[in-house]
Amino acid sequence: MNLDRVIAVRNTKTIYRDGDKCIKVFNDVHSKSMVLNEALNNSRVEETGLYVPKVHDVTTIDGKWAIVSDYIQGKTLAQIMAEEPENAEKWISFFVEQQLFVHSKNCPMLSKLKDKMNYKILQADLPATTRYDLHTRLEGMPKHSKLCHGDFNTSNVIISDDGTPFIIDWAHATQGNASADAARTFLCFWLDGDIGGADIYLDIFCDKSGTDKRYVQSWMPIVAASQSVKGNEKEREFLLSWVNVVDYE
Figure (cartoon, rainbow, N blue to C red):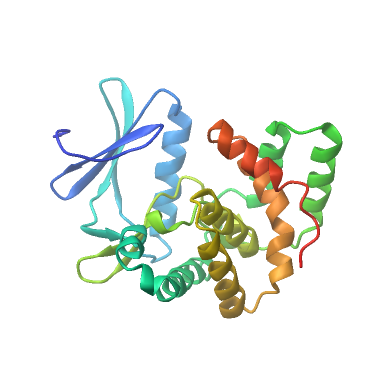
């Protein structure tokens, strides 16, 4: 494999292109089980019929775990929106349509979203009483089994050269409540500093899905707490600030 062409660098991985293949090489933070789980998640999502890069191999390169998958030639939705700020609402609407298409699928072999969130809340840097309250709130939420991406943001949607929207990075995929997935996406906009985009996204998601905005908002403290165990200190501080947000206009 040729690792000369770097196409992206993240905190825990470096992504290379080798012809029509994408090679994602993880650093030591990612355990063997985490890498195998990501490849398995992606493979299971492939079976739903969604447009996703197909996994071809899981291997080691210089002692580091790597996933080899299709390379998708095109632009991310984040790149397109940066080039066309005047069309932000149009592209966010398109973005929501892709997310709702994901939510229309079932993938029964995936982990359950509630189980994953309960585990992460246990790890959150919060008082025991707050964690207990979050666990209680989570258990009281309706149980669904929709396919949830878990990190659905505009960088994870690639519009190929022929116009096909591909969705990448299924490491956090679960089956569960679509409104929890939407709450995560809303917080992703905030973490990127696009507060206006977050509000537009939430309005469009609720309108297109027929969901009460307050219901999605009720997930935000739970989702923020579960996400706070990852990321840098600034992100954790921001996410934890959402944990006690209960009342919404």
